[in-house]
Amino acid sequence: MKRGAQYDVTTTDQRLLDEVGPSDWVHTDPWRVLRIQSEFVEGFGALAEIGRAISVFGSARTRPDDPQYQQAVDLGGRLADAGYAVITGGGPGIMEAANKGARDASGLSVGLGIELPFEQGINAYVDLGVNFRYFFARKTMFVKYAQGFVVFPGGYGTLDELFEAMTLVQTHKVTAFPIILIGTEYWKGLVDWLRDTLVAEKKISAVDIDLLTVTDDLGEAMDVLAKAGQARNSAGRG
Image (cartoon, rainbow, N blue to C red; front, side):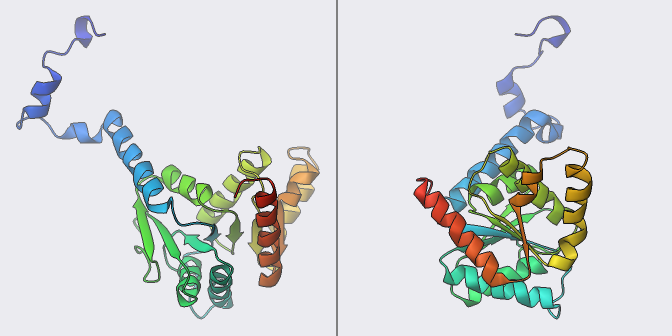
């Protein structure tokens, strides 16, 4: 209901059919709600049938001659051989490497892209790609359709996904959801800070550190994922 100065002097149909009207309406918050809705609908529709999947994160700046790139290729292949689809952000670096490994092993390679001014589009090794405008819609897809995260060294975007996953597990929004950090030397400072500062000052509990598995061994990473999968199956979560 609108009264006084809030009353519209034109009707909704008139504004819809008036070709001369301003185009600013497409940038208003109510219109953005429809765009946001469309991203969720598109993402759900595209990913609903991919089956078991693991989301892999890491720096977009990692070069193909970097050992971490080759390790991510190896991981992508192992995941595909184990029957997992591989979900990444669809960009270059570690994302490209994991997608490449999955593709080379004849697995399903998924890329969830995001509009950014400084990164390339979907990499060439993605079989199923979805582009997003909004980070929060994209983040939902990373978690909803994955049975775990594997996180390689990366920057702010990688840390953002890591801590979001940790928060969801800590608050029991997701269960039987392993989070594996690849690269003990890279992650050592962060894990030490979590233990020596956050736990010491009682900002988190000591058991919250156990949400993370830190390793250099891809075999150990695959074992952790397999055990989590068994736990999910025994609990009837698929």
